[in-house]
Length: 210
Image (cartoon, rainbow, N blue to C red; front, side):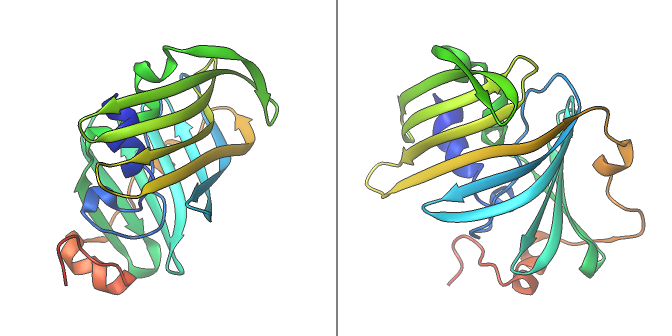
């Protein structure tokens, strides 16, 4: 299953879709049918990243510090263009979002239900995932509510001839309700820069750079 292979790995790296190799988490469009906000915890090979997210159907905003710089990632299903907003730098970086970043919206994640569980106050169905694709092998489990909220994910991804990446995603303090539309729009007047320009400011390294 491609979404749980390349997607699960890509969804764990900040600015992956900007072709950056940083160790902070990126946003991932889910298939929620309702609006909500939540605290998001993502652990990659034992290193934990915490941030806040806001979601409406077809839209997401994730806030996360990158090397101490507050950042917000805005994603929408009606456009392949995502935006990384850096308020302290008065800058917006636009990027083409790979389809694999939509891992939590992939219907194939829910083809093996294994039971019902309550995750941090939200009723969910647990689904088992164990898939091998050309890009590698993904194995784990995902807990999704009846409204499509991705409450929890645990698993690992192994690319051919590469080390295993262990992953964990969990939402807490989920508050259901409509979210302001302004959260899903980049501020007006911000400078738009390409990934190559912003990477050195964040201490990030472009793929293929030496």
